[in-house]
Amino acid sequence: MPPRITPLTDPEDTASSRRLAWLASDAEGTPLGSAFVRLFDTEGQRHLAELEITVHPAERRHGVGGALLEAATAAARDDGRRSLVAQATTGSPGDLFLAAQGFRRVLALTYARLPLPELDLTRIDGIADLPHPGYELTHWDGVVPPELAAGFAASRRAMDDMPMEETDYGTVAWDVDRVVAVAEAVLRRGEALQTVAVLDRADGSVVGFSELVVPGDGRGDAQHYGTGVLPEHRGHGLGLWMKARSIRLARERHPELSGLLTDTADSNAPMLAINDALGYLPTHRAVEYQRDL
Image (spheres, rainbow, N blue to C red):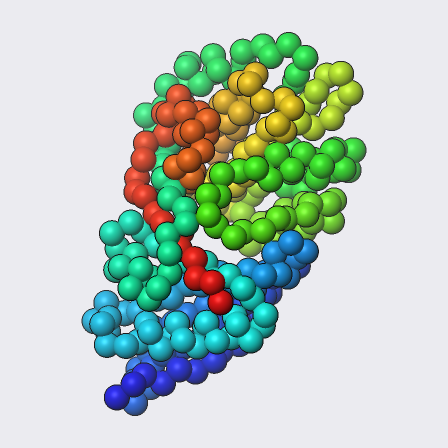
């Protein structure tokens, strides 16, 4: 008997996206799996939908995932989306499922972790304190200070040429309202947001940034968000400099943190080299899939 697919109400709307949800259940109402589709509503990404499907291991290969995918695809198509993307750990059931359902691989990612208890702080200090003529580092917690807000928003274009290979990710337009909204969303979740930025001494402009989200209790693993340097300021070691300072700040402020997590496209050789130099260890690989609607 095919599973029953029930649309759900999902309260996870944000300033830039909204989410649809479905529950798969059997004839007795026992949950078998779920699906979520995030619909991006910002200019430059209104063509995009992001899929997440979970099926109980005992219920796989019985049509549950296919039924959830059919409902999610129909909803994304009805909303005028042209691309549906999903991610799966390499070699996992999700990886095999997406490939079998006609998705194509568009991006390979490496996930890595920096184990903080074993960190060589002397080496990190040496990188963090290395002079970079013409530049200086600054940092803040939570929402960007008003005097840096416009420059920080402008510096977000450093991520525009981040390697995305064949992914139809679109473009993200950043302004002060958006950077403030993202920071406030992190804080509402009860987490801490730490940002390290590079300033050009010539005019005080923000030319690079590195963000880290820390659990509210300061324990477990923190997650790196964006790290980028404007194209005209690359080649000076600024990315490595910022990330080393971010690591040191995290150790000083959150001594009970276990590690720092990051993920990087396999085609992003400069960032992979930075992670290697700082001691990040690969944990697993993932694949981004895409289906054209």
